[in-house]
Amino acid sequence: MVSESLVNLSRLQFAATAMYHFLFVPLTLGMAWLLLVMESVYVMTGQVVWKDMTRFWGKLFGINFALGVTTGITLEFQFGTNWAYYSHYVGDIFGTPLALEGLMAFFLESTFIGLFFFGWDRLSKVQHLMVTALMALGTNLSALWILVANGWMQNPVGAQFNWQTMRMELVDFWAVLFNPDAQAKFVHTVSAGYVTGAAFVLAISSWYLLRGRDVEFAKRSFRVAAAFGLASALSVIVLGDESGYTVGEAQQTKMAALEAMWDTEPAPAGLKIVAWIDEAQSRNDWEIEIPWLLGLIGTRSVSRELPGIHQIKARNRERIERGAQAVIALEALRSNRDDESARRTFERAKADLGFGLLLKKYVADVRQATPAVIERAMNDTVPRVAPMFWGFRVMVGLAFLMLALFALAFVSTLRSPGTARPWLLKSALWMLPAPWLAAELGWFVAEYGRQPWTIYGVLPTSQSVSTLSVSSLYGSLAGFLGFYSLLLAVEIYLMVKYARLGPGSLGTGRYLNEPAATAGPAHA
Image (cartoon, rainbow, N blue to C red; front, top):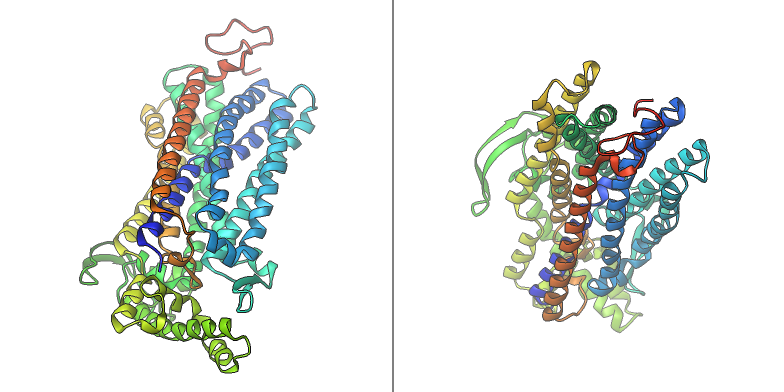
């Protein structure tokens, strides 16, 4: 048995570092493609203002990228320090995409980012544009491999448990790569990053327009951000629907918790807009729903049912009982590899091995599991409903608000990019935190909703941690929080500093608070 405090602190430390890291990631994903759009216009038109836009927004991109890399390094080390048994158990599968991500991030991505900043006077226009394109591609490929790894944790395909090595082993790399959960998560996550980059550029451009400074520069930046953001926000919502379908297929427990669906409803189930959830009584006191919508999203049909929480728990109880037989048989095989009876028992029940391991949170020997212990393990298989339900709805609400903002901003650019509408420009400023909040809530829903598993249905979180002391975890958690908070403060300080300086920080002489330029006005 593992100390519950050790498990909770290990989870908290990883969650805190991951959440901090993901404050930087979406902006990197989105800004890279915005830079490519701006530089493409520069190469096509030769207008120097587009080069200035690429260089200025690239400066803010570079600040964010550097701090994002710094916060990301510790995440990978934690698999060896805090989650050693997890790394042993699934390292054969998880290590492959993680290694590929490292190659993408530290070789492809970082190399082209260096060329982006230092190649302006050394490369031709077209060569530098190709560098920017490869930089943008590298950021997305880096994200792809991380999300392939995470998608496998959500839906462990292409692997099987080997009782002789006591590990999960890779049997089909392509199944892991093309895992529907991984692919849906990838396109949804990068689209959210594009929204973040667009919201960032839109908000700062709006600030310039409200103050009437560097207007031609700000108009163009506003126009690009509005168009790119509108397309990205639509993508997030459409691809979010696809993510909902993959959850309905592979993680019905998460779907039931997201929708506070306590009992199986006749197909197609309705989607709850709001509900008053009573978790103690396992029911909703009242709810407002849209008929049929959940069934259409979760099953793509009008006849398939989605199981409710009570039915899922009853099914999981049976799986825990069968899984206990698998655990007992596995322990017998470890003592005697030639025990044919134990081998046959294990083969019959091995699909539920992970559920049997849930009992080890409460008893060292699963033979000692009483009905009360089985009941506790069964209840563990469903995360708390209220945080899932409301976290998901706040995330979706923010997505639709951002869609409305980008739509209004885009319409305004058809006549004039927001200069006659101060309320719209102010709205863009106030909405700046929205994509980050939505992204963090998205990760919360995805990861909290997977509990009690690190590998869904395969390896419980309680069995994944390293044997560390609680005091060392308190110390490392405090250290991480302090260091990451310092990095976040540095990021905010530098971003605010250079955003206030504006394109004048380029030293071209064409913008506010600079000496008059000899190269002509900004719109030349």
